[in-house]
Figure 1 (cartoon, rainbow, N blue to C red):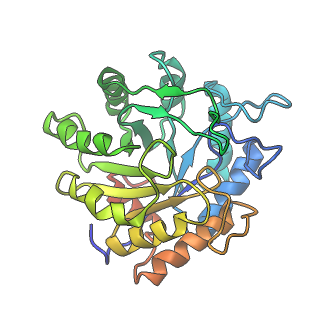
Figure 2 (cartoon, rainbow, N blue to C red):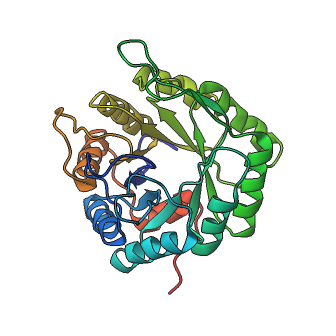
Length: 293
């Protein structure tokens, strides 16, 4: 990767728990398809997807029902057939039946692989916990089980790293031949108990990657994330944004939809002198086979 290569743009449409009654996140198949089309028209070639419960009043909750997931996936592909899907697999505990059944059902080109564990914490201004402290557990055994299924289904893993030790583990996984080539790593920056969304961290993180690894930044937060996106673009990384990651545009105003966030991200890329990867370039960069004729 270099600072002149095209940048893959990913849109994280909705997230796992954001309440659609409070924020403009898509939930239904039609809403997800609308958001995917907005992102595609703005320059994204890949979607990071979570799927929501479709029962009335339950859209703030995730679902691992493979038929619901398939219905949403079909709606997206009917609207934007060329777009790549990177399906979330994040789940607490050892029961992987939900995400594995969804991977089997829709067979996305890419799937998120949470590459290590994190104490998922946040403290309010008054010192109280924002939620009960929880462990986002991603043991090596769990990682290996996901990787085995991704290999069987010909799905490319995207290694999500929330902390520096997780980033450094990627080289160990590579040394043990656990990961396919090319290796894809995402630096998740801005989670309160993980790596901060600070541009100054990027050179150090990139230096810890195996030679030849591709990387992107997932910047979580408010308008401070845009300096991190700019640094990512300048250093040759790939970029992701969407209503899962932020609700705020660079000027501090709230985004009305995913398309506005992708438009702002594309501006950062072009300000760095780079161009946005086409779908053909994205497939080549991600190591995903060309679409069937």
